[in-house]
Length: 173
Image (cartoon, helix red, strand yellow):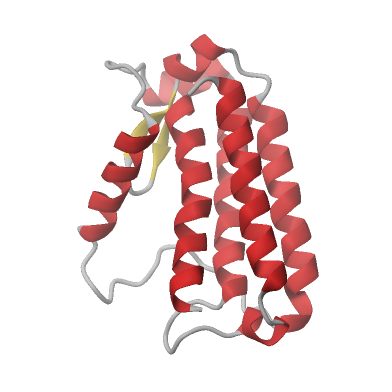
């Protein structure tokens, strides 16, 4: 995927998730299956992910190269990233608490949280637009589950991550 395709994929994933959550009964926003995150907490998790990635790509490129090195391979495509992510998720033992701390949210927070999700995605896209095609493949960022990824890969992953959570919501909520 080139940069514009990735940014479009991010926008589409945001739009699809927003549409589904907006159509969901407001009362369900603050609740989830027993012992699972609420819909709002899924969205909060996605906000945090986008903001962390934005923080990473705003870091001066020379610092990222110094801290994380240079890639020794070509950037992976969407299908490979999906498969690696699914494999890594499957390796997490059942009952392992999430390292992500999400807020307790209620149905009255729905509109505000969806606006925050849109703003976080917009901020990520605005900062990603400053990167050249070559830079996306030449600089690494760490991912807590996937290890070091090129910036191109982690942007693709971020859009896929939105869909991953949307699919969970569609299946279980």
